[in-house]
Amino acid sequence: MSAKYSFLKGPELRPSGWVRRQLEIQAAGQAGQLDRIWPDVRDSRWVGGDREGWERVPYWLDGFIPLAYLLGDEDMISRAKRYVDAILAGQQSDGWICPNGDTPREKYDMWAVELLSKVLFVYYDLSGDGRVPEAVYRALRNWYEGLRSGSLKLFEWSRSRWFEALVAIRRLKELRGEEPWLLDLARMLREQGLDWGAASKKWDRFYYEWTHDTHIVNVGMCMKASELCADVLGEPPTGEADRLYAILERFHGTPSGAFNGDECLAGRSPIRGFELCSVAELMYSYEWLFALTGRQKWAERLERLAFNALPATLSDDMWTHQYDQMTNQNACVPGHTRSLFGTNGTEANMFGLEPNYGCCTANHGQAWPHFAMSTVMRSRGGLRVVTPVPALASIDFRGTRVELEIGGDYPFDNDITFTVTAGGDTDFALEIPVPGFATRVTVDGRPFDGRLIRRKGFPKGKTVITLGFRTEGRLTRTTGGLYALSAGSLLYALPVRAEKKKYEYVRYGTERKFPYCDYRLYPASDWNFGFDGPRQSFEPVRRARPDVPFSSEDPPLSISVRVAHIDWGLEPGYRYNCAAYPAHTAALDGGQTAEFVPYGCAKLRMTELPLCRRPSKSGAAGADAGTEPPGKEK
Image (tube, rainbow, N blue to C red; front, side):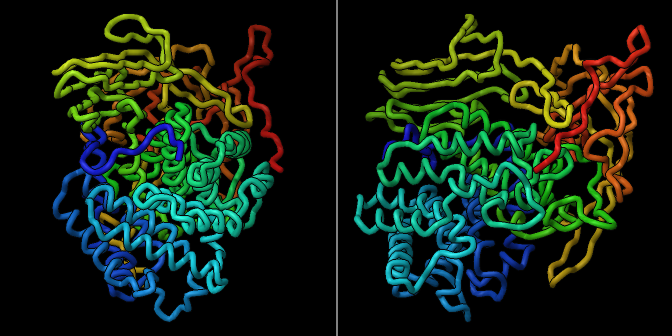
């Protein structure tokens, strides 16, 4: 295996600052409490109940386990252990590990094994529980024998997500060596699994139909498939992820770094939306792609998702979430005549316990903890900072204890400190990236024009390295002549004040009640604006250090922007939702100053806006400021 970097394990990495606070909010919210409130986890067949016994408990554990250990919360750790104990106790003598009940094994979708095997190793790497490697070994061997004999086959989700099993296969190789059957299993999965290279030929368009090969969560997952498979099998890197990314960005990209898919690939319209699970899985793919390739672009794409698309679709207290979020989201209200979305229902953009479908309820909790575990990685010579958010890493390096503390408040502030504390003189090396968007960069107070700070050799005691830079706001053209405002990794949006209506009820035996009830968000302020001129100074200003990092009530940053009212219009058939593109872009007034805030802080927002047209002195509209009609989607 030839990965450039490796993930730290167990107590080697701890979040601090705002990242820890975000995890504390999650622990007190929906993802931290599902085993107490949600029947599909609380009463799952995985723990002897009668509810879902497939993906939802493994999905939930994928976030809950690292959340518990990152926070050092003994109650959560014991609750996670209860689930792991039940799963391991239910493993049969031949290695079969799933609670399939009355479903014959050959009809049980083995996606659950692909997912669970990865999750159990998350538990092992954090807890050190020695039962796990043997249990995963037996489960995968059982699956291998079934696939080899033909009694088991890949179908549906297991066929689409075959590569997820490679995470556990890779870990078993590290622990037990290259047993031939493990490599045979990896090859067999690739041969029987969905060919994502061929599937990508359909990605230059969107369809109003549901298919596995355009399903946005599958697509987000598959980004890492080729590089992960090459690493496990000892083959040359393929570069396939770059090709897939280019297609997705061109035809389905959004300013937040996510790809539109509601539930399948959906073009670039700012009101089509994308699923929360796709954000979580795309982040996980980027974490692996950085570790495998060492290319900083994957780290910067990861943080763009983490700082924008992820918090935007979660309520401040993380008790509710959306299934689909839209870039221009001036209302979160069900459609009355038809859905805004391709194959999802009318309630997919509501905030609630399980809007549209419960997969995101179970799965969204993995995103923040896995991000926190990926902020610093081990290199061959020491440590590599992936994203310079607050964290504390501590490793034994060639017999010397070395600690790295990352201080500051990035991305809300760009003055960052890196404190290395060495137990003795050491040739430990530290690598610190400088973001590609950074300007006026200084290192230890002196100008720096590189993109990677590398220090090798540290004396006993403390050494402090300081990094400072500026981020400049800029407008970027998106789709249909619209523009979006960014500064560094943060996307900015015009917040729309929300009138919030609460709904408490029971559906399919599952209760929604405060704080995990459903909410509709109605617009209570104007949203029909355009940028009043492209030549503005977009300077982010620090407003506060809120208790909630991405607070909608008290955003940490803002940018003052000149805007003007325009005739935008509503999407046909809807009472509240804005049209995909404005009807007219002529300014209707003299303009005003509005405060744009980080996209992740604005639950109702307008993000992609046109440049307003204003008459020239001759009376004609400015030719360079209009919005052309959107191009036809294939």
